[in-house]
Length: 331
Image (cartoon, rainbow, N blue to C red; front, side, top):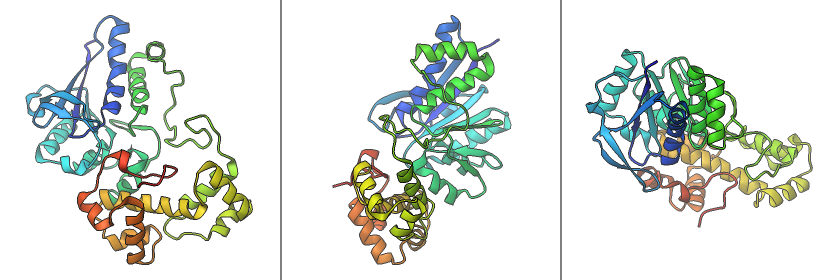
């Protein structure tokens, strides 16, 4: 059987951890097999060294230098994916579609696939930070909160370390479980998750600490009522705890009050829409539970350090300066 080929297109400021996590299982498959099962080429529009989001550089070949069809064409992107929807990118992806290649994406690469018209009629996933923006931009594409989605000849992954598991599941489809078990052992991946696994598991925190069910329920109620926020007393009632008990749980596990947390997750949703869509700011304010544009702008600036109008122009700042639920407040 000839080696399967992968064209991996990376964009400026791509996530190198995600990209390398995806590639390495294929390298290990070749190593364990003793002969190449997979070959891959890193591509970018112009070729040459491309900077990742953490500053590391990757040598790439120009997209136009590849004429032979590949088995897989995968786009790996991070910040501002829409900035990379060029005529060349559209032509390359549509050519891959016409040749019936498997087309996929890592992290925010699904935005590029959608903009280029190769995701219509498919289900896809993106990093949870960008799910709201993806839904707003592409209402006709079904977005999933799963770690990865394999829908016929379209495959997408939310990114991060899940990209390694995603790659192993692709290998499993062609070469079986025995090889994947060997790869997982080699990479010390002890628990390979199944398709459909959520990006945000209900119970386990990354450090192994389990948040009480009542607190999780309160947070879920808040997340389900962002556009029309509920009174805090109603959230406590829905979680079957007293408001005083909920205050204590938030203080202990989250480090902020329920009111602060509720405001933060509404603002975090708003920021995704501000920086990743062209929705009018007034609509974003209402969609995030703010009845006053002035109050929204003032609260937004207090959380992120700049008003939404300026964030839309100068936004997409590196992740370490962005806030997200249960992260410390900036500044």
